[in-house]
Image (cartoon, rainbow, N blue to C red; front, side, top):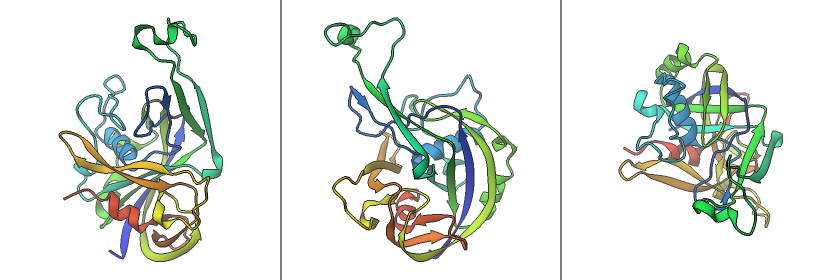
Length: 253
């Protein structure tokens, strides 16, 4: 397709966020410095379903309750490409995971009760912009007008609390060629302009492939890097979403 419509969300984190990366080890938990497409889809779906604060269940990156939530199950044809901070305004912190009541040291107690002294990573930023796409504008208008999204506060990922500050009216995005521009989202690795030795590559869960057992498709992506190729952009180019990401994120049919 040569165009999509985009609904933009402005989110305000109220705490550090831990969005645990796939392929974690038992002793190091690395966080994505953004909300992947699957995470943001689950976050918006939970708000639209009006789940109570006490009945909240962790289900955005990990399958903890044998269910997943996706915005396209509520609004067919609408899909998420994630939520992202300004790459220059992200702070990533690491700390030892704490267990109240446990005493840890490097010689004995770290392994007591099969609990390991894990290093956990979280990130802090002042705001994120999330994006939902659709081939038609009508379902995005319905979502934008839904009062369940107005100034809502909810948990997201493994650890973190986020507030919906505002929802911007849907905009039309046209397919264009870009050169050496930093996109609004992650971009597939093949679009990067320069393969440096210190380039950080994230293996990002893009969409659900199978429900039972749950299998997510994962793609190598870069974040905050200039890329080239085709992308969907608005007139002012304040939104730039790589075309290969859009193609991969679309739900399987």
